[in-house]
Length: 94
Image (cartoon, rainbow, N blue to C red):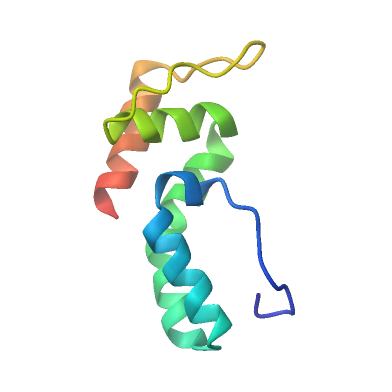
């Protein structure tokens, strides 16, 4: 948004919605220093999304927060147990 975007579609917003709305609000207010601090705190989830299948990562993140959303629709594979634990750790750090 610092280079002119007016919004975004974000997988992380599915698993960290409050933080995502806060990031958007800070950008809208052009409070860039605060937005960058929050973005850096949220970067771990972006790294997880880059490492794993997007849909599977969202679903694993939701399950780790108590939402039983099931596995991704084939042909996408669910994350392994260790991958789910890695996503849960990232979210716990946030």
